[in-house]
View 1: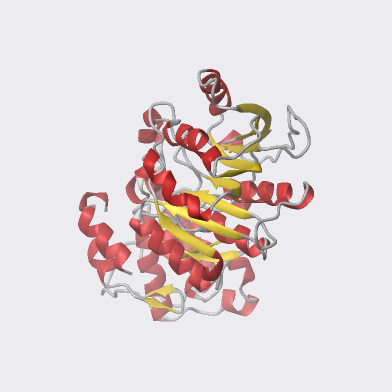
View 2: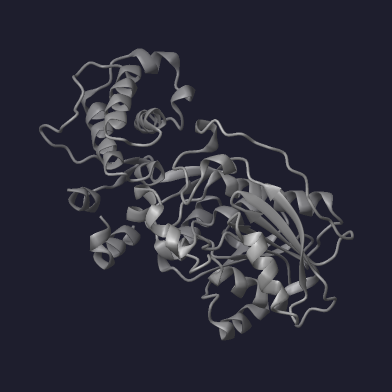
Amino acid sequence: MLRALLSGLGWRKGIWGCAFSSWQPHQPPAGLSATEVVSHWTVVFEEKGIPEARESSEYIVAHVLGAKTFQSLRPALRTQPLTPWQLQCIQELSSYRLQRMPVQYILGEWDFQGLNLKMAPPVFIPRPETEELVEWVLEEVTQGPRVVGAEGGPLILEVGCGSGAISLSLLSRLPQSRVTAVEKGEAAICLTHENAQRLRLQDRIQIVPFDVTLVESWAHLLPWGPVDLVVSNPPYVFHRDMENLAPEILRYEDPVALDGGEEGMDIITHILALAPQLLKDSGSIFLEVDPRHPELVGSWLQSQPDLPLSLVAVRRDFCGRRWAGGWPSLPHEALNPIMPAVPSLLSNHDWEPKIDCRTYPWCWSMKEKWTETPHQELMAKWKTEEPGRL
């Protein structure tokens, strides 16, 4: 059912086109208002064990009515009866949610750092805590000694760009910056290209097919370096934890973007070992990692005496108390999180080469000790290649 509907879906002003049928289970009666339809689908989602039931319902109804959030709808739109077409469209989109499709994929778009990004499976969905990673990068750039590239702004390398959320957010907030975004997934490369064009940022970003595990491939990045910043939200889920992830993640998101190997360190160690070849003397690396990783990375660094890196600081994520091997499908405003302000535990000297790593739910930093630097075909294709995922 889902595959047949997806193959016939089209975009219409940001709303999924709807495949109509004469009757569907859970269909609400005609003449209901938007508020009543939200309540109807909230009950249905709760009965079926769908996470964030009310938020899911509100986003779907608001989307069909042309708004980003239900709260932003004019009061009159919340209370007037919906048309049969609107009810049917909500029905179809809600049927995807009942199959545990993430809201971001259902709507086909999502906001990140104030940017509206297109979303499509199986490309990894950016999470709220990654917005904090972006804020931390911006804090370092704006509050520390000025990072200046060849054209007056920082040169940034993102490893594994996914939808382009991190790169495009930094470009939008740092007007003179430039980004090289590397990614090995074809679907993610295409989506980043599309989002860059939608936001008119394509002139300041280079998107390069790249596999971080292939050591020889780093030589291809040298023409774009040396860089001021390396940023990444790499795959860092422990392999044994993969089976415990939410159905929204397991069924729809690319496992390659999540599975970090036995200890979640496979890609992290590649980045740490190879990034110095591209960093400037005053460059920094920002990573989002698991809360277990600071200790593991510290041990790994001790086993790499020739790699001049050391741990500097740890910070806690805003929603660490909620998460155990999974991610929320909705923004943190819906999660009522605790947002502890945990200062850096360690600090070194002023502006030196360093690595700032955003953990999940802890943030930590490392500092380099070296001083010299060596110089919509997507959906169809995915359904064809991964038929068992739907």
